[in-house]
Image 1 (cartoon, rainbow, N blue to C red):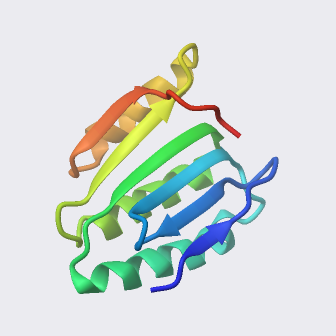
Image 2 (image 1 turned 90 degrees about the vertical axis):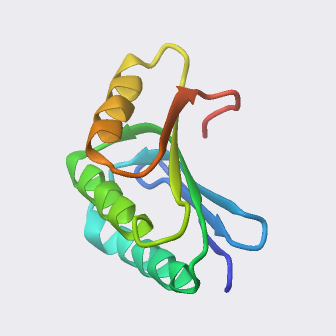
Length: 124
């Protein structure tokens, strides 16, 4: 399946989904003007990818997200629940208590294996 790459900016996150390299990342800011429209091709790509029973470790490296993005993150998690051995990793900057708490909230809601930790890499 083709790789999905969307470059990030001040309102949308960078998306890199590459099944061959086993990389599935969403990083940066997520406050698109129309979150449903922005995330539609991402949800479709993941839904199609998981049809073959693939496993995914989806890594979130988010520095800020709005309510609409939050809902679509949950929708993406629901799609991952249909896969095989899928999990989520939520990374946050060392001093960013808001993103740490957001990760803890998602961990309570999502039934997938969920790792939460400080990021060891730079955020965009």
